[in-house]
Length: 299
Image (spheres, rainbow, N blue to C red):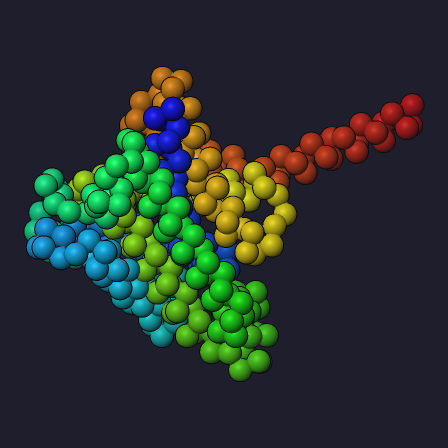
């Protein structure tokens, strides 16, 4: 029971990453490598600020702002510097490593004995792991509601149009460069926000905690889409959270089967690859079914 509750709590907290990446990967239609730098950047910022006595909530919001600034840099390199988005993200991700070391002063900083969002009187009486579930639900309801509301505004519709068809968006007077920059800022702000939450839940920040983050975030998106089929845009945002929880249960099952925790990144990559190849498998199976029916008819 405790493992299941822990998986749900972890899934809710890591779902912030899925929603953040959804904005660039699904709406703007490109994968932003900056997230592997902004996740530990958000963790480093929040942990360093809390260590200096800042209120945990303010420290978490500060992480969002710092992450958004990193997204701004990527956006400017991409739109104004005309650097390919993949390379722009890698450049900022690489720079974030040094920035994180500057912020923390060393490779790893602990929150032992410090106040965090998970250590307050409202969550103190809850059973083990339920604090992450309750806080995760609150965070995801707020973030998902804000994103859904934003996408229904005129600015949000311009953002969606930019991802759908840039030429058409420009013809309608939409500044597509500004939309891309805004998307990268919000996306990386949410990724850094998620990093701050995960760091507080784990009790530490590490300069290497961003390795493989993009795979985890993509897994939340892809598993949610595969599991729940054709959905509206708003429903897909909710499915990201459910996909993140399902992904955590898959990892829990893998560990129960006797695999090492060191294999999780490899297993995550395999799971994601299989999920993304599912349409190909369906087409192959459908083709074989049609071919078999054709042969049976000829007979």
